Amino acid sequence: METTTPATKNTMAFFVQSALAFGLALAFLLIAILYLPADPWPKAFLALGTIFLTTSSFSLAKCVRDAQESQHVVSRLDQARVDRILAEHDPWKDVA
Image (tube, rainbow, N blue to C red; front, top):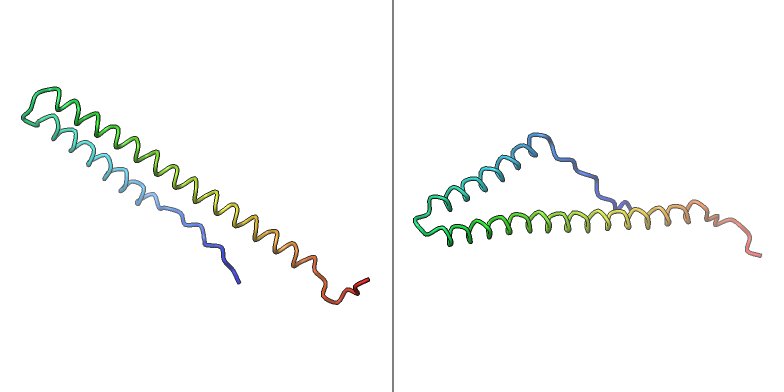
């Protein structure tokens, strides 16, 4: 029974689309904050909140990716151990 999942690769088009969507969303949000009819202090607060949210989103995505990659490595190591044990097992060998 094969339990490994195939590694999926993102295409360059998907990467470009994701990067453009992120860049446009961030740019439009910062432009909206800039043109907000308010004093500079509330605008600065909203801009800093936006930047903090963006950087923390990148950190969270990295942590999730690292956790998934480490789980995949552990799963592959366990599968390799089982394969080695099965390859070395000889059911016809006499028990002494």
